[in-house]
Length: 623
Image (cartoon, rainbow, N blue to C red; front, side, top):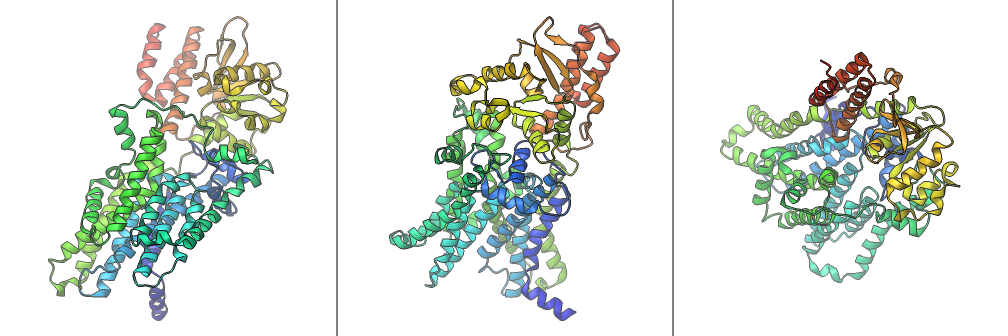
């Protein structure tokens, strides 16, 4: 048995295995059990139907995650969340691989076995520090493409380091570059931020020998392999021909494919930037927040002490940072309330940052061990102390971020969507506004087949012909087909669509729609977190439909779950605000007891509303 164990240890790097298994174990403990907010429901629907998600389509992520949906346990969303957890875990292995490679010629002591052992421990410490950083952890526990692109970026960086090593020895192996080019093209199918890393990859090649620029044949071969990887985008037109359940942009033609890939459907208006906004945009990349102040110091130590030995690798990292900031902060220039979206783009840079944090760990460890006599270094207490020192940072980062990222009881989005659907009359047209208000409903209806009689109409998309095409029974003979929709305000288009549907069936709007546009031409009746619209005749506001509240599931809303991202917090506030609105209307109708009960529920769900609740009660002279 001991012989087998010894052979296993020689063949298998247990530290490398730990760099994957430990993060994966923690990610599975904190994994979201179902659909979440933001893009989750949309991604899940696209993966289910092998369709196209929002621009640029994400074909690699969709096909990668699809394989996990055949797991024999859990619901569909949970299986896809596992796919993201796995991609995040192997991204941590990418950190381990890079750190260990960059330290390959470094020694703590003259004893090679001792030094190799601690190079692996340091690499594992860096991998786990990255694993438990706030950004990667948040992306690991529900469906996100950013861990996948981070893993690919690490592999490309590693392949180029191998190429450089062989090139220095006169043993040229261009297939490393070709494979890296293929992965780079493939990475575009996970997210387009891969293009921001291309200058760093090119620098790693050119900085070793600028004469490679004259090798036209090899450059053309690298481009060919890059295009071969990029061909994963053929998924979009091929599947669009089959009209999948989610077919964003309908990219079956070259024109629509380019419209989709180049993100032409997004607004281009940029805010006027002052210093405060600029600082907020720059702060989207925040090393101390992700790795603590100690991690920031270790990063600087690693860059400083290894600059001579690893100058090109460090400059490639800094070049990547510069390009990311110039494009994401300088060009995208995000609106103040959308900066949180750009924070996700920096995940590959955090991976590379963790690598240099690992180099800093090694320098500190080497400095400390350097003052200990050689004969004592082999003793167990010294080894254990060194191990604990390396583990201190990842354990601290994990402790700081665990509660914030624990989503294993996060049913907020699932319940919010089911509450909206289950209370609607048969054959309703429900108009939604925000992505988080729409996408979980898409998932429930398209994947879990809930309330397929309801038409879920996403108001911001009514300006696109491809979207109208996806509802032939609703819009084939619609007046919207005869109008220049690009020249009409979205509010007016929505009112036109409502007017057409209100003649023939129940029409509801969600909370976001209610407070995003003016609806003075309709009667409005609140029904929980949705509102029924009718033709205006008499009073604009009807008494709220109170019976729907008893049908609601609101797990986690009362504080059982600590996790709160932006839209999870908004959903909880919507529940509270809806109760407050209902209470106000009931007090106005003289139904005092019912009104007070609703107001108390509002402040129980969101204590920050107590001031508004008190103001309403005082306005009606109710104590």
